[in-house]
Image (tube, rainbow, N blue to C red):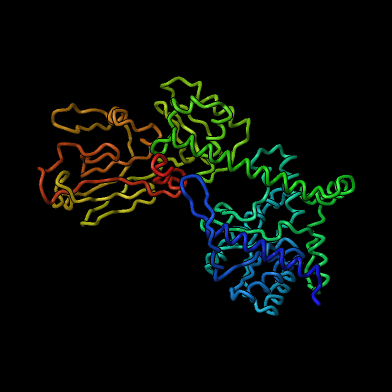
Length: 493
C-alpha cells in the first residue's frame, strides 16, 4: 500500500505543475487582460530543473523524473558549478551520477566569481547562475525551467523584502510561473516553482522515505548572508510564537500579487493615454496624481527591463520633470539610462559614455550595397532606390566618409531656402540635443552630402527620375535597442 505522505506529495506536485503548464502555455492576451483557455494546455515535450544537488532540488528531481516518465516528457537537469566551495567538484560529480541513475539528461556550466565581498558574492552568484541556466535552456530548447523554491523560501523572501522597505511588487514574493528575461537572458523562457505550497519539513520527510541522497552546502549556515541570518536566527523565533506564519506570509504574497496586477493594468491604461512614439507627453502625465505618475514611471522602466529605482529617487525625479521650465533640457541620470525632457516630452535614453571626439572618420566606397554597417558609430547606413536623391552612378564614383560633427557645418536643403548651420536645422526638425550627438554625417570628397536626421544638401541632388539613391541612417546599437529599440508605444498598447 502506498505511503499517504508520498501520494500527497506526488499529487501536490502534479497538480501544481499542471496548473503551471496551463498558465504558461494556454494564456491568451487580449489588450491588458488575461483570459485563461478552458482547454487543457498540451504538456511540453521537454522540461528542465535547476539542480544544485541539495535537498530541495534533489526531491524536485525525483518528482520530475517520475512525472516525465509518466507523461513521455524529456527531462533535463542543469547544474551550475560556482567554484566557491572546495566541495563544488564533489557536488558536480554527485549530480551527474544521480541523473545517470535516473536516466535524466544532465548538463552543467562552470562560472567564476571574483567579488570577495559576501553580499557581492551572493548577488553575483545568483545572477551568474541564472544566466548559465538560461544558456542551457536555449541550448537544449527547453521552454520551462523548474526551480525548487518551497513555502519556507517564499516566507523568507517576503520577510526580506519587508525588512528592505519594499513596495507591492517586492512583497509579492515569487510567482508560481513567470518570465525572467533579466536573469535567464531570454524573454521567451519561463521559470516555474511547483513546490511553492510544500514546506521544507515535507521535503525532508519525502527524502527520508525515498532514501534520496543529497549534498549539504556549508554556505547555507554562514550568517553573513542575509537570507541565512533570517533563516537560522529569526525564523525559528517566529515559528515559536506564530505557528504557521509561513502559510500566512504566502497568503500575503498572493494578495500583493493581485494588487500588483491591478497596478500594472492601471499603468498600461495610463501609458495608452500618455505615450507617443518612444516618449511620454508631459501635459498628459501632469493630469495624474503623484502616486499614479510613480506607478506609470515604474511600469515604463519595467517595459525596458531597467533596474527599479527607490521611491525617494522616483519622487525626486518626478518633481524635477514636472517643475522644470518648458524649454529646459533636463537630464536625470539612472544607473542604466538617462531620463530626459525635451519640448514637454519625457524620453528614456541609454547611458552614453562614448567620447565621440576619439572616433575617427571612416572613409568608404559605395559599390551598390543596400546597406553598410558602421558598428563603432552604432548604426547602419541604408541606400534606398528612389526617384529623389543622388545619382547612383555618381555616388559610386565618390570617395565617401562617415564622421561625427566637428562644429560649424552648414547645409542648404532646398534652392528656395537659405543655407543654415546644422544646429538650427536639427532644432527645426525637432531632434533632441542628445540625439544630434549620435547622428553622423556623410561627406563626398570635401563636400557635405548628407546629415542623418535632416537629409541631403540640395547642391548634390540629381534630377528626379530612375537611377537615384537616397540615404537613410538607422541606429543599430545594443544599448539603444534595449531602451526604445523601435518601440511604438502608442501603437502597441
